[in-house]
Length: 273
Image (tube, rainbow, N blue to C red; front, side):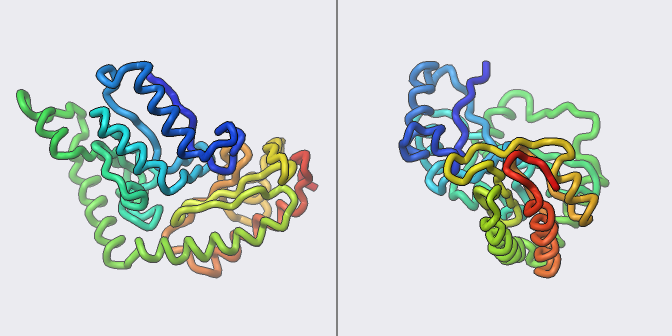
């Protein structure tokens, strides 16, 4: 059985009944645990930053308070860091950014920078000890420990270290964010948010009501790509950018110019002129 809880999305204050988002979410999680029973819950699984959801950045105190509540109830914390790990947020893992220590971390993508498919599940020692107590820790997949994929991952991680890409992600990410913030003068741009090299521009019909902008055909990312050559992704009414960690300031400027050239021609009913 899987139970869902409200996501941390500070821009959408209507989700939290006028309360502080973290206070609301922790109260909801606590009530959920009490209703189901802590003894019946194996783990809480979550993306530290929701990627496909629209690059939703939680308040800084959200994950630390979640972690404390789960520990109190002896419930494991599992982070899906397929998107966020290996430098994307300016740290090796988003868990470090938020100051928490998950019991299990699921990773992929950035472990090889996409040069070859590879995924990895990282487990805390206490978990590995239990799983390996009687029969070892068998995974049972045909391509476990694939030597080519493992070699690519090691080389990729070495490059990230040697070229200082964690610090670079923070530096260029901050620069890109400041440039994207200039889009806030457009009537359909409600919020610009980021962590490291994960960026989102939330589009609305009205800045006061924060009503989401309808996403009509032709889709904004298609027009931006066709007209400017810049690739962005739509996640609902959000435009999401996840540029390479080696991006330059000139390339960041080009991305922002590309977005502006299309967004300034987009009306509040989602039509591009």
